[in-house]
Length: 85
Image 1 (cartoon, helix red, strand yellow):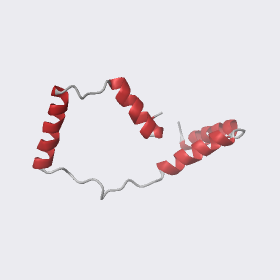
Image 2 (cartoon, rainbow, N blue to C red; image 1 turned 135 degrees about the horizontal axis):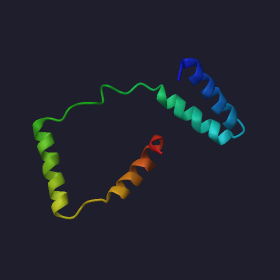
Image 3 (spheres, helix red, strand yellow; image 1 turned 90 degrees about the horizontal axis):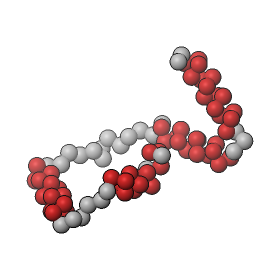
Image 4 (tube, helix red, strand yellow; image 1 turned 90 degrees about the vertical axis):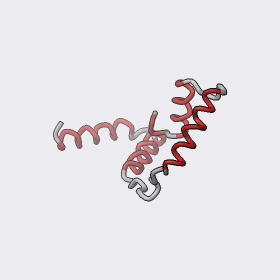
């Protein structure tokens, strides 16, 4: 699609949901989140010792049956991160 076609489709979709304040609020919130810059300073790599400790803890969890099914993890993620829905 061209930029003009995309813009036209966006306006058409907005017109469709304009009757619902709840939908308009969701769309506006989502659009505002799209414009948020990702925090660069928060991404700090693990040291080798930290990484090895996490691996050991994970293997210990597996050995002791402390695991979750894929469906449960997906449910937890969609509850925490609404934009995954």
